[in-house]
Structure formats: C-alpha cells, structure tokens
Image 1 (cartoon, rainbow over the protein chains, first blue to last red):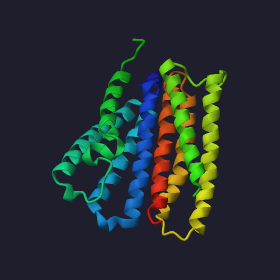
Image 2 (image 1 turned 120 degrees about the horizontal axis):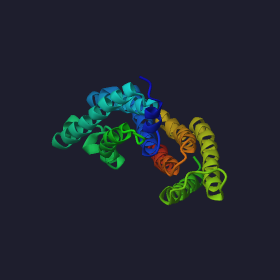
Image 3 (image 1 turned 90 degrees about the horizontal axis):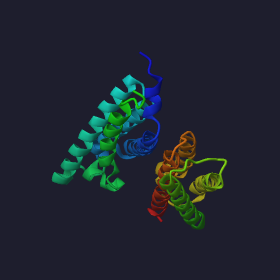
Image 4 (image 1 turned 45 degrees about the horizontal axis):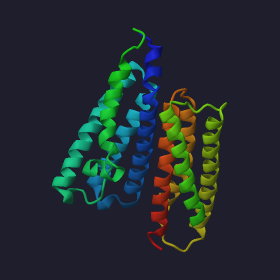
Length: 138
Length: 126
C-alpha cells in the first residue's frame, strides 16, 4: 500500500536534522575505519572491525531514514536498535576492560571522543521513528 | 599548510553556525529572498570557497613537503569539509522550516572539528 506522506514526514522537520547528524557519523565512521583497516589493521583488529561494523550501521540507518518507506523505516529501526546495543555494550566493555580496545572506536566510552553524540543519537532516532509514524491529518 | 587560512576558516564556520543557530531558534527557514537567508548562505558559500582553496593548497603541500604524513587521513580531512558543507547546504535548502538552518548548524560545526584534526595530522610528524 503506497503511503507518500510517510517518507516525506520521516525526512522533514526534526527528521531532517537527525538525518544530517546520522550522515556526518556515517561519513566519519566509514572514512575512519577505511583508514584504520587500510593502513594498520594488524594493530587492533577487534577495534577496527568494530569501527567498520559501526560505520555500516550508520550508513544503513542514514540511507533508510532518507528513503522513509515503511520497509526502510523497519530496517532503520533495527539498525538503530543495533546501534544502541552496540554503543552500550562497547561503551561498558571499553571501561571494564580497556586492554581489549587498544585503539578507540566510535563507541568506546559511550562515544566520549564524539561528545557522547553516539550514545544520544540512537535514542533520538527511535523517538523520531515513533513520532513520525503518526499521521498528523488522521 | 596555511595556518592563517585554516584559522580564518575556523572562525568563519563558527560565525556561520551561530547565524544559522539564531535563525533556527527564531523559527526562520533559510529563505533566499530575505537578507538574513541570503546572508547566511553567502557566508556558507564563502566558507566553501575557502575550503576548496585549502584542499587544493593542502594536496599540493602534501606532495611538496618533506614531512612523513598520514596521507590518507590528511586528504580525508582536506576534502571532508568541502563535501560535508555542500551536502549540508543542499539538505538545508530543501527544508522550509526552522530545521533547515538547524542542518546548517551541524554542517558548519563539523567543519572546525575536521580542521582541527587536519592540523593534528599535519603537526603529528613535524
């Protein structure tokens, strides 16, 4: 069932700002992990694979939020939940066992290197998917 | 690497971010038919021009310099702000509410962060 208003709602208003922040993180995480894996993968393979995984999650979330169809929104929701679990898990592990992460990832210490935006972003993302699902006309 | 240019670009991007923030708080979209809309877009266009000049100059410097640089990161932080700012401007113009300038704030604040990292990469093996 086509729903042209849904995609429009998803990427308008606060959604436009949210997508902008997601896009910046998608670009930053992708570029960072590409350099890490391309130039010094052997130094910290676990951290660098996690960086790459985080990059993929951000890219998927960004693209799906921009598309905004019902299916895309479902995929976006799943990727944002993965992102939330990832930042909480990696954040906790990086504090409990710093030796496991010889080099920082986006999610280390709950995204402290990125002024904790990585920890706040998934919460805002889930909130926005919830808010934008409602049709204001109905 | 031109320190004066990098410093100027940092201040210009912060000024543009502040201007866009005021528009967002005031609930004004980035209207090209109003002076405050044209103004902020003009500053962003100037900033973009300066970033392109820096990118070209930086890539030339990379080939001329005798420093041992992390070339990939250096080029990334030269080209990154050019792309991010241009995309942010287009993404902001398509929005006819206060969230348009809010997008510009994000784009403009990403620039000084990348300029700082650029400087760190340049200074790393001075």
